[in-house]
Amino acid sequence: MATKKFMYLNRKASYGTAYAIESLEVVLIAAAFDQDVSLAFIDDGVYQIVEGQNTDGIGMKNFSKTFHALGDYDINKLYVSAESLVERGLTADDLMSLVYEDEDDDWAEKPSVKIVSNAELTKIMSDQDVCLSF
Amino acid sequence: MLHTVNKSSFERNSLQSCLNTIDDTSVILLIEDGVISAANNANSSMLSDLATQGRVYALQGDVDARGISSKVADNIKLVDYAGFVDLVVEHGTAVSWV
Image 1 (cartoon, rainbow over the protein chains, first blue to last red):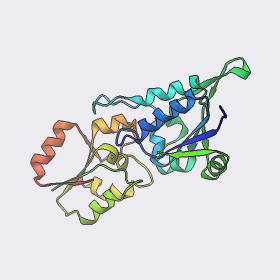
Image 2: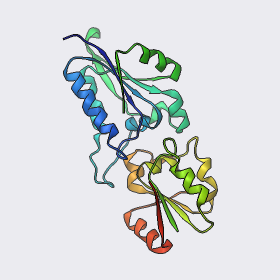
Image 3: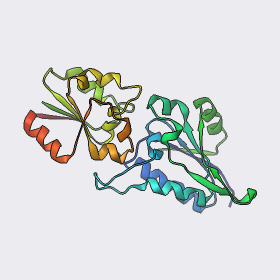
Image 4: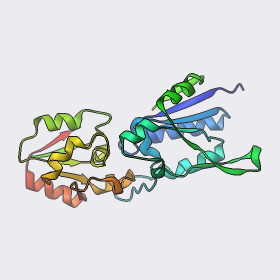
């Protein structure tokens, strides 16, 4: 099967709506079909990968841990909008440390998250075959 | 009156609509994605006056779920579900800015 470049645009915070968890489900499906998958976190979507989420008080599943599994599915291109972080008073230190093991580099552990400007994101998006917005 | 806001101020204008019509004695309770407006960020000025007057609350469980408990503005009060009920009892008519 031909491989296409898929990008998933995550624009909403987790838990308030089902968009975040539904996106994650579809991301994993695309990975199962060996597609080239990238994720972008823009606007309130940046809250999806904030460190220290605790859902005990709202009776919902804390699915933020699933993001740690993406590296094992060869999903290691997670782009975060720098502008969206700044607007929300967040920095790189507030985000989960998401990593993957690089098979071309003796399985060295490397960061999956890359903070990019919106201009850089524009370029990355234009390089995709399919962009899906959640 | 008690006004609840459950949408992020970065995504919808619910909070602004609420602020446009709120009277001098009403309080605001931020719930669900509304708690994003309780964090120190580019939209903080929207609530700063009311928060200074002690009239802004946020639901603790929703704050914790989003990992932003360390970011909540100093003068915004955190309440649990029991506190939510107390606010309803105390302030009478509730408006839900969905």
